[in-house]
Image (cartoon, rainbow, N blue to C red):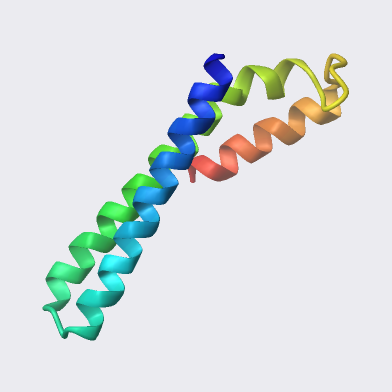
Length: 90
């Protein structure tokens, strides 16, 4: 159940981000000031980062413990997951 709640939260956040992007498109079309547009872009960047953190938080244990077949991960798979987390955090 918690996994479904996390999935719903991620989807809702992504829909919100999509709405913000549409708002920025309108701001550009309407000729709004650059500083206002850049402020909104910064907000979107932060929102996307937060979604990524939520996904990592909710799914990290699954990724670190079990592979796609439900078997314990091996060293190579663990290194791949760690590399993905490190690349995301850059």
